[in-house]
Length: 165
Length: 102
Image (cartoon, rainbow over all chains, first blue to last red; front, side, top):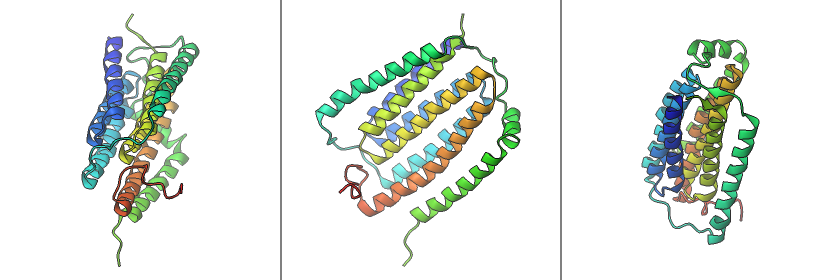
């Protein structure tokens, strides 16, 4: 059962990720990226990350991607033009990427042979556990994060405002 | 035997990361390049949560949580920068935004 769910959503995620890269229109890429994030949320649930699965849907698919789609609509971004790169770049680049992927996969398989994932194998990812760790062990990073978000809000407002003469 | 080896999750994470790198390198539209960065961040999050399962500790999930928060802040600022670039240059092609190179 776990294997079937994993394979379904892993293949869906990979297909959507390929779609993100090959689509020429930004809206198509954005919708494919939502597909990747949704299927990753299911995989988080399988790994026991219940809080993070919810946060993934709410923050990523709900907030960040809406921001992306909003900007694409606002700028009226059309399809990408003909690329200026040489034929040589993609001829060399794609095999290099596949080689990098092969090396990564090989070392991952060698380094982590033993552990197997089954549903419910890790029960420490509930909102209670995450909140407890967040407000005890990771309290200082959490507070610094709030400062970071404040700075990001101010920066976004300053960058995107209309010039006042 | 329906268990999934944890290395499969990490391999999926590697596949998504490499696809993100490919999008970052090969695409010309500044918005798609930005979406490729989000794809890479997501791939790393999957790794963090898989490690969290492996060591039976919640710390990996908290790192993924912080990555998510930083990604949200980065998206807000980055999209504001894209808006400003478009306002000044009327283009979204990264090849035409190269005045710092010349």
